[in-house]
Image (cartoon, rainbow, N blue to C red; front, top):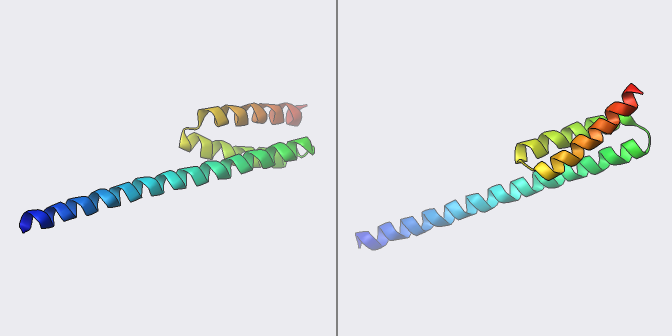
Length: 90
């Protein structure tokens, strides 16, 4: 009886671990989606000539992508920030 009870706990523990892992993946996906939206908004501000607002949104996106380890997206945001810098210095 004891062995079946302990195996039930192990199975429940694995199920909870899987749910936690899936939950973390969902949170990471949502954060990357948020950063993507911020990057797009930054690009829109840049296209409309509002470099200061573009910088704010792009910096927010950069921090999220950096924390998530999303290198490809991070590179894109960094290039847009360089463009913002050129405009603001110009």
